[in-house]
Length: 265
Image 1 (cartoon, rainbow, N blue to C red):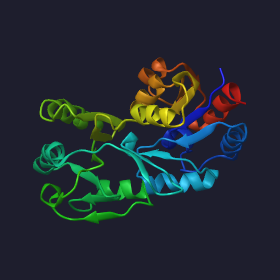
Image 2 (cartoon, rainbow, N blue to C red):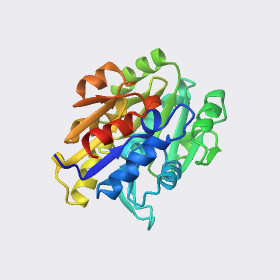
Image 3 (cartoon, rainbow, N blue to C red):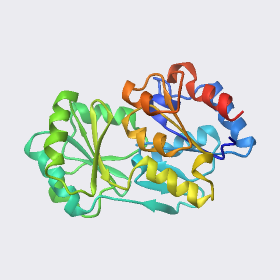
């Protein structure tokens, strides 16, 4: 099969532990582009943070950000795809965080809003340095526009309990999932990487079987399952590896490059 669209997750997939991209991965991606493959990134990060890595790779192509809640044409700035949480859908999530003292990030208009800076907030800021973060007090009182996504940060076992509780409270339009064991995220049910990859494939008139996606964890499942060839990193959870068509090497072993070399180059 000749693959024409390749979408790649960032954290724990393309990025090493120091948040850099290896030279081998860069070389493989550029070789795929030279062959005519459309290569883009699909990340839970805000668009600004993903844009930095597009620059590193030298890519000029619409990019998937906010877990798939947004696709932006980075050349023109046009928002091509946007699926957000309405105020009605966001409100019970924000109030739950306030009532239960959970660190909560609310993403609205390309800014991260928090109640107050906490140790967990500082940790998140260290991972996502290209996105402005503002302390605004109670988020339930501050929110004025639809939220691109909402993120809770806490211990995994506690977040598992929270997920079960909130699934009974929130509207069916809300998708709840783990992006990392300590990150519980909330998006519009159509704000997923799989839905975004489908949109891009249709936009470029590329068949589903001609798409390839590489990811590592739960928030990548939708695009791994949608793609004609879904690839999981060996450092991904067993449940995700079992759903993939192929398991490549880890993010510390140039797993992305290995997959590109095997199936595209």
